[in-house]
Structure formats: structure tokens, C-alpha cells
Image 1 (cartoon, rainbow, N blue to C red):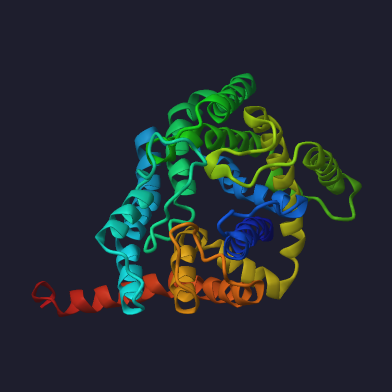
Image 2: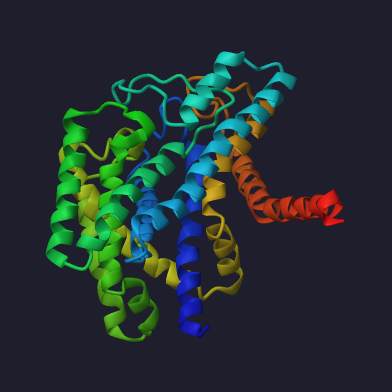
Amino acid sequence: MDNAVKSRAYSVDVLKGLIIIAIVFLHIIFSTHDDAGSPGIPIQAMYLGLMAFFLLSGYFYRPDRGFVSNMKKRVNQLFIALAVCSVILPILLYAWLAVLGQAQGLDDYILALQWGFGMNEVFMPLGSPKVYPLCGSAVGYYFLWAMLIAFIILYALADHIVKDNKRLAVTIIALLIIAALIAEFGRYRLPFFAELAPLAAAFMFAGAGLAKFGLVEKIEEFSWKDGRYWLPLVASLAIAAVMLFIFPPGINFDILILGQYGGLSTFPYFIESICMFVVFLYLCNLLSKIPGLVILLTECGKHTLGILLYHGFVASFIMAVICPLTDQSWFPADLTLMQRLPIAFATLIICYVICRFGPVLIGKIKAKKDKGSPESS
């Protein structure tokens, strides 16, 4: 593997690591009864990084593999992970809450199953008052369901669309119009969070379009001493800065509050996200030159899915010891910033350890079991 390929892999993993670390800290520090409230432009701009996962999914789409083959891989990766985290983690957290005297009965576990499988509050207005399962910690489940359904749209259409720029542009615009109409007139929760899929798919197709121009590769190939290297960054940063102040993005993708202008905010939100994606790529390309930091970010980036799924569970596990969990928010609102910060650090470390060493441990246990079975004799 040559240095350019290594650098690109580092750069993308660094980006994923940076975003997932930001997500963990933003969720744990800002998620209270009123969610993140009005955090200001810097936090809103950082939140747009969440869309980078959709963009990267489209960026690394490979044509001509077939719908069934592509979906089989994604179902194995996403649905099985969601199923495990929807069934097993709530049992573990329920048992822990029972030890602490906070368990609320079987109904709480059933509600956690509904959250995990995307069947909570179906056909209810988006943004209506929620009842959170204490043992559920369903942070991020909506995002993965949106990704799974968006993959269905991508893989069904991409081979017929991506190679033609006009078809690609029309498809993206059509998906954005659908997303805008849903955000404006159809703001109801659909099964499996399907209302989020058109916007997610639009980002995936945009990522596939950026791949045609080799965005990541070009950022990696140019020398920072070359003036051409900085032009896309300066342009993207300038556009993003102006639009962020004129059209402040929302931080509630899960309920399609994308800005101050209802469904119309879908379009500036889309442009802002792509501009910030370019900015984040440049930032991560520079960060990939710092040896110690690149190791930390890259390692987290390799375990994005696991950290996203586990961090709510781990944080709730820790917080329950300090403060009783509430069914009105993801995490207790009574914890101070100084209490939340160490919990965020501990959560990130524990999630990484689980993701990094859990599969290895399970593999060793399985190998030992297979070795001791009668069939191996």
C-alpha cells in the first residue's frame, strides 16, 4: 500500500473519529430536557458533521455489485447491530437499574424495544412530548435506521444514475424536495424512522457525486504550499460562514427541524452540510500529520458504529449511579457540566475498549469452545 492510499485512509478515519468523539461529548454534555437548546453557531456547525457519515457512505459506493449483494452487507452490519443493541443492552441496563432500585417494570423494556426497532411514537407528530425508556438509551438508533433505508434507495437507483451528472442532480433535487415536503407538511413519525431517509439518501448521492471528482484524493494529493490546495477550503468556508449566519441550521435531524424556515431550511441545510464536509476533510487532513492525535482519532474512527450505539448505554450506566435516570430526556438534566465532562471521557474510553477488544475476546472464547467440542476430537 503506497503512502497516498495510507494517507487517505488515515484522513477519512480521522474525520470519522473526530465526528464520533464530538457526538459523544455533545450528547452527554448538552442533551437534557430541552435537548441542546440554543447552543450557538459553533455547535450547530459541528452538528452538521453528522451528515458526513451519509456523504461518506455515498462516496465509497462501488457500482455494479448488485442490489442484493450491497444490501446483504449493510443488513449484516446495521440491522444485526441494531437488533443486538435493542434487545441485549436494555436487559443489561434494566438489571443494573434494578440493582440501584430504579427499574420501572416490564413496560419500560417493551418501550426500549420499540425505540430500538424504530416503532416508537409511530404516526405521532414529530417533536411531540416523548417518554424515554430508562433502560433503552436509544441515542443514535434513528440515525442508523435512516441510513439503512437510505441505502435501499441508493443501491436501487445508483447504478442507473450516478454515472450521468444530469440524472444525479435531478435525483438529489427530487429527494430534497420530498424531504422538504415531509419537514413542512408531513411531520409524523413513520415506522423505522423512514421520514428521515429521503434527506439521508440525498446526502449519499451527493457523496457519490463528490467521489466522481475525487474530492478526498485531490485534497490529499495537493501540497499545502500549492495555492490551489487552499481554494476549495476558502470557498467552502466562506459559503458556510455566510449561510450559517443567514440560515442557522437546526440540531434536530431526528425530528427534521433543520432550521428556522420549516421545510425550506432543507436546502440551505444540505448546502451547509456539504461545505462543512469539505472544511472537516481539510481539517482532518492537517490533523493526520500529528502522529499522536492521528492514532487517537483513527482508532475511534475505525469503531464509529459501535461507539455510536454503545455510548448512550454506557453513559446511562454511569449516570444512574450519580443521579436517577428520567423518562423525560436521554440523560438526567440535573448533572452539572463538571459532572458530565468526566462521564463523557469515561464513556468514550469504555466504548472504545468494548469495540476494540470485545470481538477479539468473543473470538477466543468461540475458538476455545470449538476446540473442546466433540466434533473437533
